[in-house]
Image 1 (cartoon, rainbow, N blue to C red):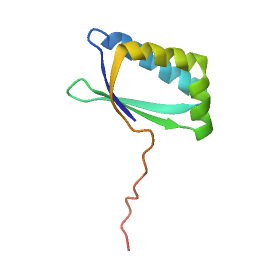
Image 2 (tube, rainbow, N blue to C red):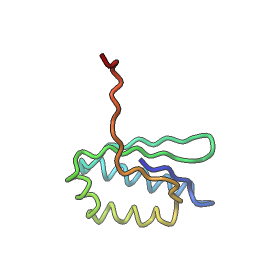
Image 3 (cartoon, rainbow, N blue to C red):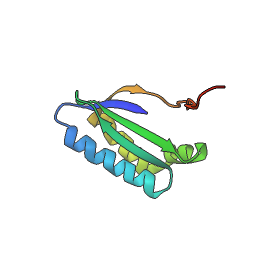
Image 4 (cartoon, rainbow, N blue to C red):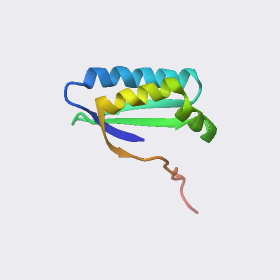
Length: 93
């Protein structure tokens, strides 16, 4: 999960790059992504990797690397959570 905001005057460009990145990751079967926005112009990207192997493969993929390089000039990352643990919601007995 990543929380980010666009660099001034780069919102349209950053969203285009994020869309391209999500399309590449999806087409190659690396991940499934969801993008949200809060009321303060912060974006929250949730990425569900298919597997740890897919995550490693994506990190080495030249198309993915090009998108990440462009994003480095288009967004400011506020917070990243590499891994989150699920919390059971069922009642304990």
